[in-house]
Structure formats: C-alpha cells, structure tokens
Image (cartoon, rainbow, N blue to C red):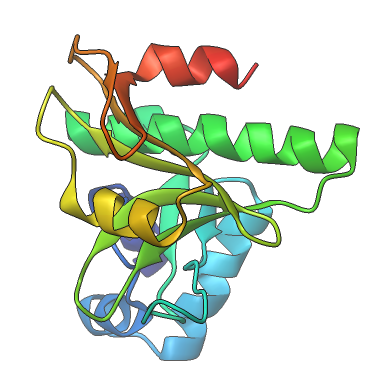
Amino acid sequence: MGNLELLILRLPELVGSPLSINALREDLQLTHKTVANWLQILERLYAIHRLSPFGAPRIRAVKKEQKHYHWDWSVVQEPSLRFENLVAGHLLKWVHHQQDAKGRDVELRYFRDTDRREVDFVVEGRAPKLMVECKWADTEVDRSLKYLKARFPKCEAWQVSAVGTKDYVTPEGIRVAPAMRLLRELV
C-alpha cells in the first residue's frame, strides 16, 4: 500500500478536527511539502474540501488551522462525524449557490479560539450570517455556540441534531432543531 493511499484512508477519521499536516507527515514519514501537495491534489480532484477558521478582531480566534471534509460523506465511518460532514457538504453547496447565482460574497468557515471553544460552521460575509453546531442527539445548547452568539447577536444561530427531536428557540435566540429543519431552509 502506498503512502498516498494511506493518507486517503486516514483522512476520514480526522473529519471535523483541525487538520495537522505535521501530524500526518509524522504518521506517514513524509515531508511537510509532500503531504501539503497531496492535500491540494485531493481538493482539486473534489475528494475533500477544507475550511479556514473564522476570526474577527473581537475574538481570540485560531487563524491557521484548517478543517477538512469529504465531498462523499459516505466514506466517513463514524456516524456523528459522517453527520457533521453531511451538514458541511450541504452548507458548502448553499454557499456556492449564494456566490454563483446571487453574487453574494460569503464563505463557509468554522470557529475555534485559543480557549478551545469551537463552533462547527460559520457562514460569513462582512460579518457572520449563520452559525451551525452539529450534535448527534438532543443535548444542552453548546457553550461555544452561546459564546459566539453573544458576540454576534444579529447572526442566525442553529444547533442541529441527527437523531434528536427537540425544536425550540433559546432565550439567546439559538434555534435548536433536527437537522432537516435547517437543511430544508437552505434549498
């Protein structure tokens, strides 16, 4: 088995986490440049897409670590990661539609700060427009989503679940709902 094949087999396990080229380089015993080039090739072949972090001046955001997702989310075996990857795919397609069909200047990013608070997805233009946190089942509203929503109160915020059934809006204005509610609105 070749090193590129090993990389491709390893990537689905890392979905949704900051992608460390150095860690991959050490695992595969390759140079940083080789792994970085292979990741770019996989992006150009539409195998993966990467998200950069969202960073605004008023939050201490991580600025460099990218996350990756697969265009074909069925390659991700772990159910909660596959669900997050599915939501990423739908959000990215919606963002591309906003860019291409409506001429909007929006990007899909994620949020992570130096205190390790993280929100899975942030759609931003000049300011954040939509925040989405993915959970497998019904849970308490994520503290990181509350933190980010407090800093950007005008931004629409969702916590979506794969198998949860609760549907409500918190006093902070965060919509908690099954993922289908949000995904239907993206059409």
